[in-house]
Image (tube, rainbow, N blue to C red):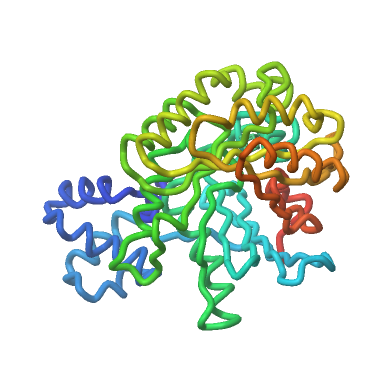
Length: 361
Ligand code: SF4
């Protein structure tokens, strides 16, 4: 049986250069092809009119161009959702499924992007963590999510486009840093039709310390959010066992302080309030102690109930008290509303379940 041809969209720019070199082609062709693929989004090699016929033929013999296929498209039906949240289930070339979410809020149109199919971290409150890790996504598979969501927006209104991107979907972006960086480089390329400022992009991590240090050193200038959920080591280990044990709070705090000192950019500490678990006065005090002394803000979010996972959200009085304590301690605190709960598109709910999303006939 003949092997299927590789998907050219899965190659990084450097890999594309190497592939062209092995075909005896000059390296500058790689930038041209990359632009055809990611700016013009060419669906076949024939469309690449700035390339000679011979090169187009060579490419077609060596590669395919295969974008993820949309299996389902759901819209949030919550009454509270004045502007709908939408979720796409995408099927990748090897049959893996990932979800990606479009969030309309506060004048922004945010693409929430998955970086892995599944996740190895197994956080107790997260649906993705229940599936285990299947594989890292390629940079092309991440840019494809943004383009698919942007197409939805611009089809409805040609003046609308994605204004923000958060790597906060399925998976841990900093376990796939190279591809995430490659995707960001493509999505922020000024010469491409779709281009965002790096300041509009947030990488959300459970706190992978070596990669946080690497981000600080590489000068990416994207925003960084850290899912903290408890500033007590023991408690955090029960919520996020793998992350908390591998990246202890003391070392994480030091890495975040170094990150902000180096980049001059604040870090967002994301804290999901869970009823009776991390919502006490003592928890607020411990969090305040953790957050003092470096540039950060705290983002309190509500828990979204997921089938089979036994946590409950806090009531608004508890949330208000928690927030007030932090503010009285001099910290910058925001409360983030959760969007898309009814279509399992909210934080911690993405699981790409084919059962929930039967394929169209
Ligand atoms: S919260 Fe993030 S890191 Fe934890 S299991 Fe879910 S996707 Fe993985």
